[in-house]
Image (cartoon, rainbow, N blue to C red; front, top):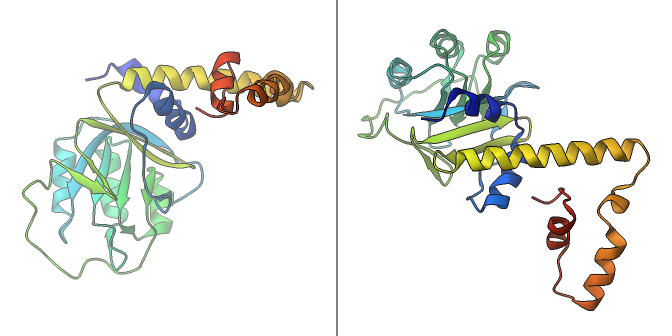
Length: 235
């Protein structure tokens, strides 16, 4: 299990920095569908995935919470359904009491006003007033894995979510991703500081030098150039 300090570092990073870091270290970039959004501005969370597959009843969520650790992110698989909400205020309150760091719902929620008041970071595909009108057989892996679009998450995965979206990582290599994301963040903040003080981005990345080299070698890419000059922008 990652050390607490690594998880705290993960929580301090944005999803764009983490996505760029995946590219830099050669890890898969697993970004959820852009329709998966925070239910309110400035919500963010990061932590280990705690999967649960919904089949019409909230009992699976309560059971998942029973085996969760503080800071885990409940990842709910409701097959991306848009005809029912699978969580509402009571589930969110229980998740908050259980110490969960947030919820990612591959489906819809309801009780939006109450959820915003509760304040637990929740990301879903949207909202609808109606709850489930079905009760299907429980999946044999209901507490072992959860699908979010093309991705299948287990407790060996980690989640980060903010205003830009939701991204997933395998535990293996997480330390490298976090370190790379921190380096990218530092570079970009310094670039922004210099721009505010009058040094253009083109000057900082020696853009004219890139143009000259590209003319001599049409295969030379801007991304390669940025790596040679220590720039960020693209991974």
